[in-house]
Image 1: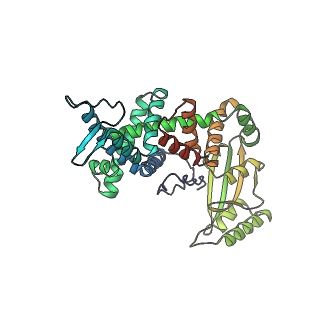
Image 2 (image 1 turned 90 degrees about the vertical axis):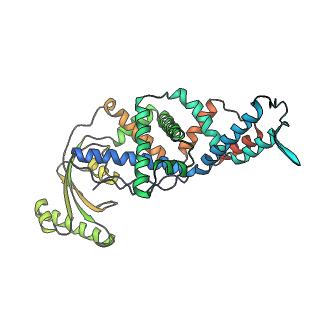
Image 3 (image 1 turned 60 degrees about the vertical axis):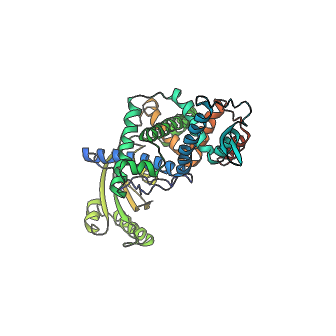
Length: 371
């Protein structure tokens, strides 16, 4: 009921097509754990699919470019037909009224190649050494590939071959390589964002935001298109609080308004539980054995929160990694271009230098679009 709402994907990504309002965090049985893991995998896969869609044409052109490059290789190195390419004017193809030279072919390929396609090669070269293939990577890549096939077969009737062709992959091996590159890029991105967080940031968050686990229950007056309006729900929540203030017990209020409200006991929840921030903040601020003096607004409606009990605040060392994860997410949410900035930084540190003037200009334009 109280899960955090997902943020919109950045503009470079095609909208995922998944409405990720996560269900309330209640007692986790095995079925819910399995569903949550499937949901997380679905989000990652949808995110990668958006990137595939974004780069679909460059990928197709990459395949075409590869074929052209093969042709060039054959023309240049085929026995008895060797062009040394000393100055790029050697013919690749002879035509009745002229020739196509190696330079002509290279210039044509540059026009068709996207800078993104070239960056795939650059990043792959840089990231392979940073993140060597291991079982975790290969299992993740295989699961992702299998899930693509499953989704496209069930939703669109695509066979594996049709899926690969539709997205411009020359073979399944090419698709797997793309998934590996995406996996490595995301690993670098995660590490990069964590590197932006220092101990001072962690300590500041610990002092202001971290609290001991809180046992709570709440009454929710929902807001919906086919139910109560915002004003109506807020008014009803205030009415319930007045009843409590006048001495009506919590259980009696729940019984009296049972047809108009939702009532839940959430049990102990930590400072980083998957609950909306407004609810967590109320849990933090309330005294034990007290309830909300004013309705608490979340995406679901208006809540009256009752704080039943609270444990001691955890030691910093035990929650440091959790805090870093929270701060990392905040940084990602605050900058939709941070993923691309991370990769730009990686190339800078690797002293990547484009020699061809057209690619130099294209990359400058690429970088400026993410500043």
